[in-house]
Image 1 (spheres, protein in one colour):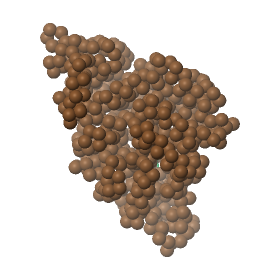
Image 2 (tube, protein in one colour; image 1 turned 45 degrees about the vertical axis):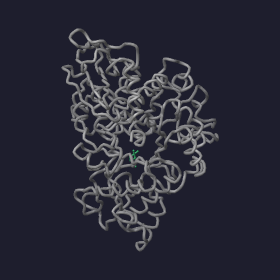
Image 3 (cartoon, helix red, strand yellow; image 1 turned 90 degrees about the vertical axis):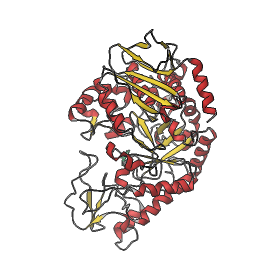
Image 4 (tube, helix red, strand yellow; image 1 turned 30 degrees about the vertical axis):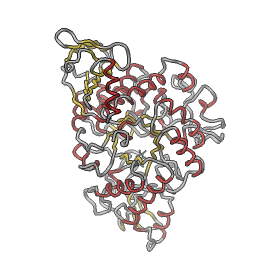
Length: 554
Ligand code: NOJ
């Protein structure tokens, strides 16, 4: 089991082919370039690469507007290059997840083009239409301030079509069995080409009832079981990682009570409260969200993340909490987006303070779930707020001090490389950090290495140890007779903590030689530095070796 459910103890790295590495000098990243960087990712300890959309697309939402589900955008290479890439990943023991964007298509997709021009076309009913402007056309926009409505009139069709996102992303009528069959076909296609599963975009909207007469878009959860079953038949170890920013009360509907739906979901709840903890030095709401999202089936797993390619969505915080996070990490209007979030990268949000970056990453790596890193965050890349909306945090990867950070030999990269100020490629790049043993990159490599050796976090049960100090979060994971104890100090002041550790006289510090010995009353006393953190295994050093033997006997 432990090796079969590979996603439980994985380390996922999210990237966009377009901005990772150009190999042919046209200024656009491509699969051949990415394949050359696989050794870098393997060296960092990444086990799974998640690719953002790379299919043909007019590119009006960075590829989340697909116009052909069965191909590679020629700017990035060919299907042949894709298969070479998945093969190269497999040779290194790495898996590939890809985005599956089937809530909507691009308005340029041939299905939509047929649907709008011919009411008798079989594709007409693949989309969601209304003869009149629906009364709720202004409700439910996802990108307030940029997107005006969820229904748009199409003159060719002589009707209104529904689009949960931008008007160039018409929603698929996912209740239509033919659309469902097509989604399964898309999944089957890419699994044949070597992927281990999908990051499913906008899951609540995919399964929601859609239509002009729908007042409350009830979810059709059984659809998730259908997707899962197809995968299980085609390729038993393939998974779906759902993007679903939902309330904890709905978690089990998405995982399935018996784990028969999604294997993984991003934990948006924990993500938002984690940023609140970092902003306010108060871990109580984070602890609460961890408790609330604890129930999940044994095979289900949370994906833990800090920043992703979208804005940091703070919509689930209270107004006061949100204002605290805005004030700390995105005080200017220009740093905020869609009335609910922050569009910056992690390093500038944390003022490039190494202690706070380590604290944030240490939390992400040790909260109950599978960590998902965003490309460039491992070297502390910055953002370019001059770029519109979410593009500010999607600039090309910074590899070296060469022109355009070594991303491309072309005269003009597809998106500007950050080249000025403290986050410019001259200062923040992989090559320089590789040579520096104390760099963020090398720190990251070391903690990822250790994280992979702590399966308790992925597999075990956790308890939040009650401490009087709200700035401190202490988690204890137990699994197969072993325990690890993880402590974080979110405050900018040193904090002394005392606790008993299940009669263990020694707690082994997994990241340094600073182990903890209990006093004569069996109490441990630890002085945490400002923003300090500790990863302990209960028991002495040789205990780690015994644990390994237990593993082998499973
Ligand atoms: C969620 C994706 O993460 C986001 O980038 C995209 O704009 C929307 N879904 C629409 O596909």
